[in-house]
Length: 303
Image 1 (tube, rainbow, N blue to C red):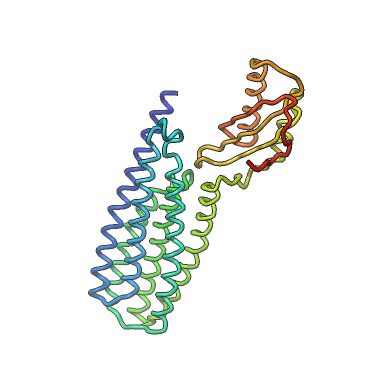
Image 2: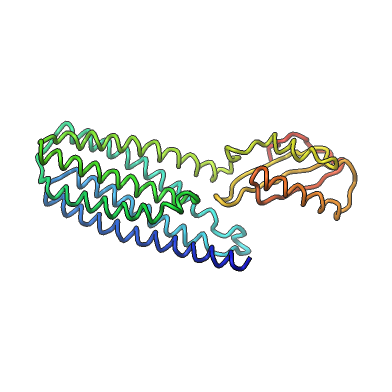
């Protein structure tokens, strides 16, 4: 058990360092693109710089949330800051949608008013953005699969990388063919992708914050599975929610067929916990035992 704790602590420290390094890289990219955009006269580059700046802010939010999520619980904060990363994911997803809408607006303006720009600077700074953001994406890729907050940061960086690819393609086409409209088209395509990804993440984080039942959990199936125990008459007044991505909680009233002792209840509870964990992935369970209690017996009862 001690080994597992030490491993998780080391992994969390590495996750925080990867986020911090990504923040530094994105600050450098943003400053370089702002300077390059002003010198070259490229609205495309300045737009990408704005996108990068929003990512710097989102990464900072993710980093703060990651640090806070490690704080211990207390008498005033019994869950600690375990939901900090979910809040960060929600904020970052919201900013993804705002940036996507703004990019579409900028792309339409540029498409209607194309301007000749210094494509050489655009190409080199786009390459810088691809390399730096690509490195950041690789740093966060593993944690993005397991953590909603890290996934939001990963999505910001990934869309930044693809935006830099679009800017590079646009810069090359402007340099060799003078097709200044291409950049606008590519920007719209990236923004549409951003809208889809941002909306999905916003919906998932919103569901967790609102204590909605996880999509892959069926309360009726859980009720039937628990009621299969001979000692249990029915299960009602159920609540299932996610505290964060690692913890799924269930609380319910369980009516027993007989007036059992506390030790008997504990033995049955152990079996129920095993069932819920292995078949439904629920790892925090709070059950209120009842016997011939006069209360509503529906699965869902409005508190």
